[in-house]
Image (cartoon, rainbow, N blue to C red; front, side):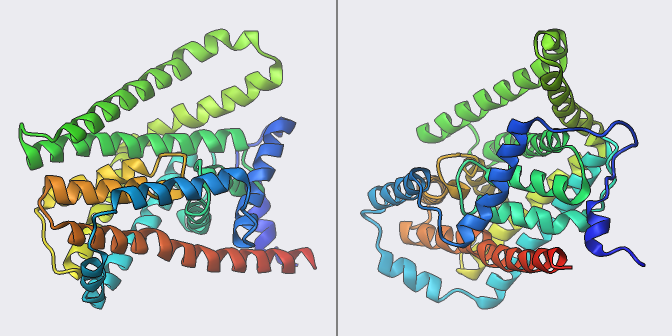
Length: 358
């Protein structure tokens, strides 16, 4: 009898050897992450953390938008060109196959061969969860899905996801400095100076952490129990080995950010607005940096305020136009993903129920 799709998905794809047994505490954490999207879709995310993650951005937006002419902003949005909005959606979703191929290439360095097509749905589900809950739980959830479907160690998969995020951050820092210099020259607004300093500080912390993971962790591993050492080793291998794929993953990362900037350029075109390419890239990477804020889902509140501030104060757009750009861009990049991810989630749940009933 031919193997079912579920059987093929669940077979281990790592190199042969002793099977890895996860620590019970990590399994519990992964199971909690696996339930996160289910609770979200069923509208049961009403814990204190979810309430806070909703209240904070609402209060921020209300405070900073108290002087905005929302009538003009809505009029600008209503007059948007549907063809350019559709183009923005297409450009945005073109980035996900590239991300999936990059993720597959990073996993391959650890001896795990999974095709980018197999990872695409998992990637979209992870982004879907990130749009619903704070703290980037979607990244842990997609690592959990890879373990459940392909039998790959969760510790190593989380390490690969961390490496993937590091590549994105390095690209963001580099683009922020280069296009920021092109856009502003030697004149930078004081608030943007603070952002630059924060970005550099975060970059230094990442480099220090990477050095500690590579050089210090193996020297102190003997101080910990055997299972903790094994989990730490798999995580370290997932991070460190992934960077062997840099010759391929590096250009793919730049391509991802090309699509991110392209989406924003299409949004501006849809609203009949134009900015120089350097300014478009700066807004795209600066706002994406704020999506890493763990207090709110997808950086909600922080991203919108930053976009409006940079577009209006730094690049001279009228405030109501800047608000229109922020609203339409987040509709393309967040709310559309909630819809697409919701459909994928329901389809996945249906497939699993059918498989369980066999």
